[in-house]
Image 1 (cartoon, rainbow, N blue to C red):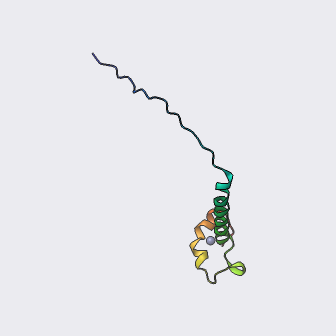
Image 2 (cartoon, rainbow, N blue to C red):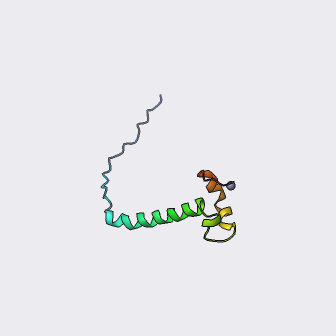
Image 3 (tube, protein in one colour):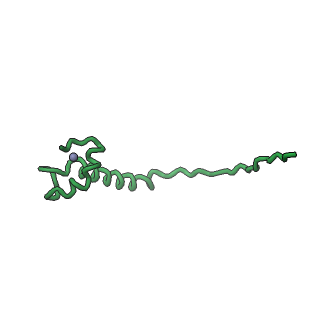
Amino acid sequence: MAESIAPPTVSPVSVKVTPLPLRAVLPWAVFVGTLMLVLLYFVGAEQGATSVFSGEGVHEWVHDGRHLLGFPCH
Ligand SMILES: [Zn+2]
């Protein structure tokens, strides 16, 4: 005769969620947003007359991202 195996009982766990204050998040949001804008510049506009660095080095490093995001290239 087969014995039935009862599923293990799990007692409920109470989790207290503490909201993050805006003053703690805002500097990091500004920092990450600035980094994203710099990255977007290098991916999207670092070429030709608007380039910060001479040569094609930066453009070649971000070339695949440029095509992935749909920026005009070649
Ligand atoms: Zn290209």
